[in-house]
Image 1 (cartoon, rainbow, N blue to C red):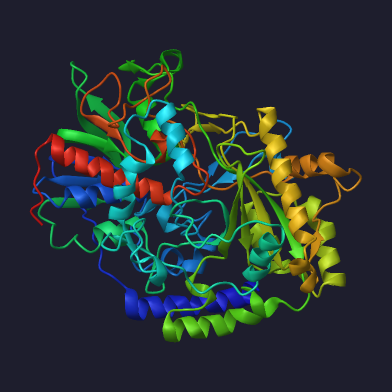
Image 2 (cartoon, helix red, strand yellow; image 1 turned 60 degrees about the horizontal axis):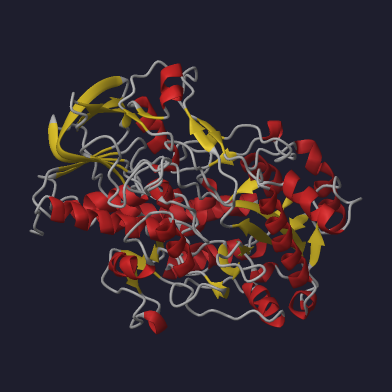
Length: 598
């Protein structure tokens, strides 16, 4: 499969260079002063900057990574698989997890985050999932006044250009927004996941971004004309040239500090670029949109954060906010693998790679034009107010060669743990390790982690400790989710394709029931790539921003991205990051009496 994937990549590169290569929208020079400085050109930051540039205000976007243009890995949808671990990724590694991540080297896992224009929207799986009504109600309960479902629905709609035919005229969807949302060609074998859910009595949800999220559904995806729709292609590239007099985009510029005057007004930023340091001033406001990891990192380096921690690192305290870098939440996930004979033609596999590449070259459609994860389920246990989890179906067949070079490397896995699985695949399954997988994803975990400074690290990367499963209820809910996957595997739908579970290591085989599931969860503990809540909004002592996203204790500084969420969401965060951007841009325009001129 790896060799075939190489051919697909080559074809995709040729197609992209022929038809989609774009000019750079970034600048090598920048001015000394701007009205607004947006720190981070990622999912939220690019959207905020794009909307502010509709006015005459002078806006600067500072992105630590490089540009996203003429890059097949960030544009051809399925090739996003290969971005983690590259220069497009911050390449964070978490702290060792006690009694978790046991199959990983040093009990650590990688945390891929986009370091590129477009941020994580340039390397994610393009899944477009809003917050459900109960998610947002929990935000309001946590002190986020004005963030109810009714309050934010107009901004979800404003961001969206929904081209799903049956939803175009739905009152829940927008059709004039910047982000194109569609359903791509479905992975054929996804039908067994959907049919299995129906067989167990779960509803099929035709619009999980509408009235209710519950049930089994096909994902909406941020894809346009066969290409990934990231925040840069949605909000910046269409306008960058016509607005270049007042919209400046600078890449390879890492912000190291926000600067304050003696009255605690944010007046500028310090950046590092190409080995040199620069100071850039802001006349009106600075918006931090550097993500759930870098936002608290920048805040603490600037003197905003837990007083004792800052003093221990010899940083002058500007605002003592203990919530900075605290309250870290993430969706932890555990995969379940299956082998089914004779289904390669229904998956992204060795047998379909070349035909898919040809279809993509000719029409911009096919399996390559979508995500390997195209269907999912939202589940609740014991009539809980909030859904505790989701199941994601992954239609990617993995052979031994690809398993060793991609899955094991990406997962930071111990090679000896999986030698038996590779041997078994060669001897019993024609070299196929597994045909597809169903991932159990824990939502609304009660365990919280931290982001802290590491001043001795030459790379200046913060210390990330998610504290997975620290609260006992979290492992219990994960086990319930994994038991549901087992029930799915026992349905007629799974049996019709002769799908059987594949255990990739034998550590937990001697156990039974819940103990076996917990053992598996503690050995194969992965991130679902959704960190949030490290600079949460609210009114308690751990809150960092108020409901208008203004940082407490200082002036002229706001935060806008997943870090301000009071709690995590049931599903992926991308759609809500766009909503936050749209809302903040309107507030800023109103506060500064900025009129749209473009």
